[in-house]
Length: 165
Image (cartoon, rainbow, N blue to C red; front, side):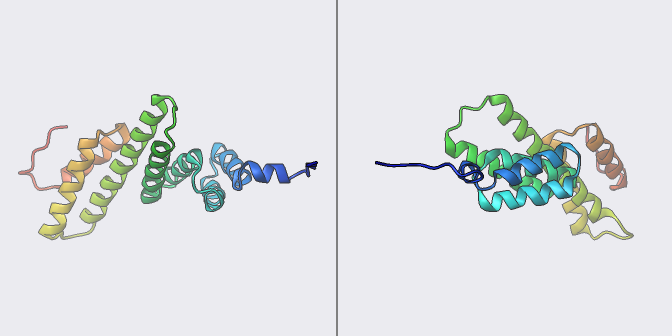
């Protein structure tokens, strides 16, 4: 005869090793405490690295902190994990994650271009890299805030460069 005893706390642990961290991270994210949310979600992912929603939430926290590489990494991980799981999640959610990834990538590219163009003289190589970053960001499609930064950066480029927005 098999006898099972339920011990408070143990069942929660079995449900997901990082569940408590994820729950806390989600709550902090809603409260716009992004650094704390990031730390909590990262702790949870260390315990349970295949949680798709945790990667999406961590990407959102990183995005809010303008930690573009972190945001890109976790959006991409979420999409990869979702594809592996054969999830039947609504396409709208996947589309939202893809758009968020593109948005983050555009911000990173715009900020890369801004960093390359800041300060006095810019070498021809850095100018070429900045122009490529701007072109790539523009190809992704820019939101209103990104468009303002894009146009400001475009004005710093040599006059012979004509780019339609």
